[in-house]
Image (cartoon, rainbow, N blue to C red; front, side, top):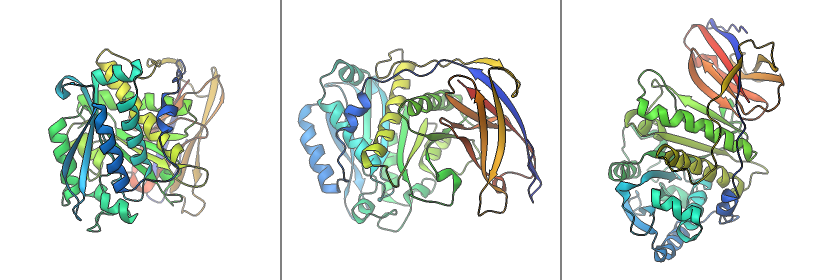
Length: 396
């Protein structure tokens, strides 16, 4: 497949077919947790009231990381087994609501806190013996109360991680210093409509592998993102997975901690709009968080949250036109663009069960699409001039 733009950027295409087993099914854990999500968002005072009541369970510890611009406490919540030592568990830090008008992450965090602090199921108790989940449900309480993106100083917190000029970003930095998490989740929401093609559907963005990326990070983020893709597909969530290289702008939270601080980090963006309820959007955040926890427990030799999925694909066919299925890659330009932006689409015909499609650019894993149409947003203006090689892998 070739494409020429005004910047003489070209893509050369190849297809690779891969076979592996499909994902298993989760026994209702996500539905149980999201059953706690209300139909409308809760405010700052409601959040504090919920957390205060849950302290009596003996599994919830509350901490203040500092104050927002307007003096509201930025509350962290550690959910743990009774008497558990943080240092002896796998630790996941989940932050939500950097942008005040994106409530699904807050509601997902509160639902997970409530479920794991009150359930007496063997699964939940087993998880808390091995893992500590630390939540910051409302990083930007001033923005949340005003229902606006920025904090009270008018600063977009998710562009402040390199400079850390705001009390809210400095508070999260202190939390990472204190808990030293094995993974970090950053929960966000996408606007109802946007001219950016990558904002068309929900997505997860994490750290890839390659030059400048510590193996300790990529060995967690790359396989975990594959597991996330499979589980999202099982639940009917159409979502893309994007991988960042070491060259990416590090002002964003997940890149700052993943690339600069060496913490495996995941940005989760749920798509808003018609037909997407608060509970549905929160369920995407819950599921992604559970998969990350599950991966950490698996890596420690104790899989207790979700049943395992096959992770070792077998190469079935290296020719995109023969074999059990065929793959054709085409470029769909944006209707209102100049021909340099649009979607790369892998059109897959034949074959039994496609788990996901991987797009690799110049040998680096670029993104994963988990449900048809298998599309990859492309802006050639962001590529260096010259020839680039695109590889597509169909896994199923």
